[in-house]
Amino acid sequence: MRELVKKFLVTTGGILGTLLIGVVAFTNFSPQLGGTPTRLEKQAFAKSGHYDEKKGEFVNLIPTREMTGGSMPSVLWKFLFHKSPQAAPPGPLPMRPLDSLAIVRKTPDVVRITWFGHSASLLEIAGQNILLDPMLSVEMGPVSWATPNRYNRELVITPEKLPYIAAVLISHDHYDHLDFRTIEKIKDKVGQFYVPLGIGAHLRAWGVPRERITEMNWGDQATLPGLLLHCTPSRHFSGRGLTNRNSTMWCSWVVQAPTKRVFYTGDGGYGPHFAAIGQQYGPFDLAVVECGQYNESWADIHMKPEQSVQAARDVRAAVMLPVHWGAFTESLHAWNEPVTRATAEAARLGQVITTPHLGEPVTLGAALPQQRWWEK
Image (tube, rainbow, N blue to C red; front, top):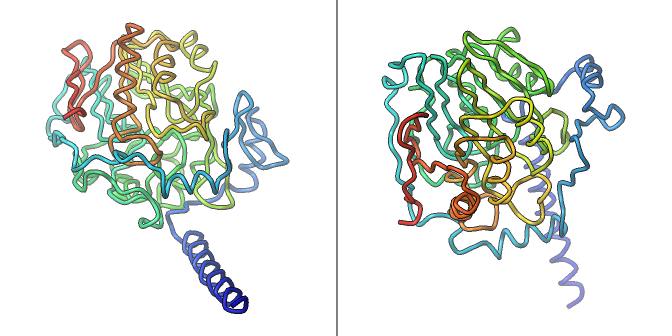
């Protein structure tokens, strides 16, 4: 009997080991992995003030743990066997397909944002089209069977139907924010990609010309006609493979027009950087705030909904748009818990919040979408 158990364990271990080797080999050779910063680029990163040259990693402004409770195996066990029964919606979410002609027809004074699900959004400001973290694919990452399924198999708009995009802003290089397939489809109709330090290597590997990539450090500023873009801190981490953890920077973004200001948090935990951004660049007419995929085990790198509302308050936002939900299940909570908790906290604190359907435009200065559609 002991010999049979031993053979079973050896065989099982061999199968798992082979699978692991296969996955590692596939992901390492997949174009999805992106590129690697050069030695000279890494030397330049050391001058950013936010890079540990010995470890070869970017660091946060304050001490930040990727895991704040439990071990990785225990978290994986919970994901497999202890997810909320409502971790995903019972069917596709209601959405408003986006008319690409409506994007083209606008005046410079219109400030409008359309949320596509998760964090992907189109910001129209100063007559320009600005794409935020455009994850516009149904499948995620190099191994789709191992990553979350998108709730809606059809999208608000496909990348091919998007008009000319003046700028794409990327907050960090995780697969749910920087999508290889989307970049391939839109790269020829984007004026400029603005990304935190290191992410240029990914874009170059995917065929984006070097001259159309602007890499930025926290505190850097770039100019577009009628707009200023500020790369600002967030509290997160990065990496697309098993060996490149924190090899690229992560950030939030300030988009500043002469009369309107918009803030996008990117991903990240709560911290004093929000109040600092609010003090330096605020007040904001709109804050697009991460609100979803949180867990006690990564409390430093993702915000709970109540913290998301407080972040909007800290940056002095007139209106908060909660994102990072409504597309994928990446944590244990119910799919609609983030927006339920956020709207309750916003009401308690007197923070104006807008909750559009997928694809429903939000125009500043007009009536804000506030229907509680996720309850139906």
